[in-house]
Image (cartoon, rainbow, N blue to C red):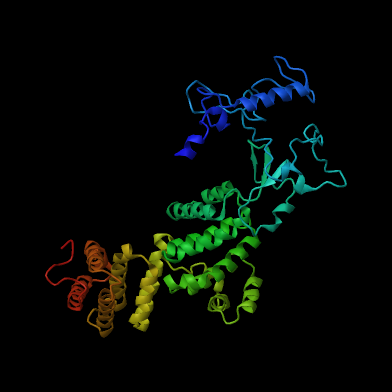
Amino acid sequence: MAEFSKRPEVTVETMGKVHNPTGEGIHAISAQAKAKAAKHKAAVGGSGPQGPQRHGHVHTEGEHETQVSEAGSARRNITRKKSDNTAGNYDDARKKQGGHGKGKWTEVMDGSEEAVVGALDENDPIYDEQEDSSAYILSSSANNENLADKKKGDETGYDSIAEKAIYGPMLTLPEFKIRLADILREYFDSADTDEVIRSIDELKCKEYHPEVVKRAISLSLDKGPRERELVSRLLTCLHPTPLAEEDVEGGFELLLTALDDLSIDIPDAKLMVGSFLARAVVDEVLPPVFLSTQNNDRPGDAVIERAVSLLSREHCTARLEHVWGPGDGRPIAELKSVMDMLLKEYLLSRELDEAAVCVKEMNAAHFQHELVKRGVTIAMEEDGQNNQSEKAASAIDAMAALFSFLVKNAIVSEYQVAKGLSRLHKILPDLSLDVPAAPEILAEFEDLAKGGGCLPIASGTPGQ
């Protein structure tokens, strides 16, 4: 207790500096510190309301003291150096971005903004067509390497917004294929070649013209003889304008390249493409040298051999004009003539399979009643005036056997046979003038047809 009582009293003067954020209450500076500061001011000399000056800077009293926003608050409002309350906005344009801003151009000072660039002169020795901004190339195909070599006069269009000429196709290849497919489908319905030519010209895609040949033939492969005949005629109308000889050759080359894929869905694709090749040579759309070149490049190709064999036949020009058969949309008179030739040849050869193939190739299911009518009429004329002869009996039996075979193989329907017999009953009085035994022959044929399954036994022929 004695030592504790000897300790001096704890006062502000003995404690020295204390932490006093508020700045109020007891004084934070001791008397010794104040005396020392006064002595230092006297040694420096001069004091006033603004304090002493040093290095040209006037020190004010309380310059380095903590500033308090409000009395009794512990929050400080410290004003730091380099801070400016008036211009405290962030300048992104003059940000240093590392490296203390070295090597950074803030302003263009080479005078390029004020320079006026004039139009390029074609007569200038250093003129470069690719740098000419008055024309540009619109293309989506990486294979069109020659587009940069286009000259004035070959423009495919004009961009009114950019005020520049356009070279190259106006559509991409997928877009062109979609538009072309629509044009060809419409052509299959209307058979208007002029409309196809006009539509192709409006597309303005000369670089894609070989696709016209490939696409037209590909779409017709899974259709009937009429559509294939229309495509052959279309190729004749498209050559030489708008399809040049190079476009036709390129189209057939594309078709031959893709033929393996087409054969998966269409087994007879190679035979039909061979017929298209032969027909194009006859129509002078394709030069004969094309077949020779392809025969050397594709030795043993069935398509090229098919085309060469068709062109090597006797009277090949006349035969290839009707290569797609009578069901290609030709007149009814010509179709009737083909039926007469077919039926007479059958009565001579009696080959059911060959006759069935010919009937199927006609592709005239809606007109098969005419075949029945003409078949029975020819059989009546074959027997002559005497229907009791063996020749007459054999002709009627042969004709009944033919239609029974066609019905059983679903080539001719029972309805078409019944309709043909109904038409025969209507013209029977006229037939009796030439063949008096026509009613008896017709009745005999009906009995044979019912026995062979051509007609339903319970129902008679229409019109009876």
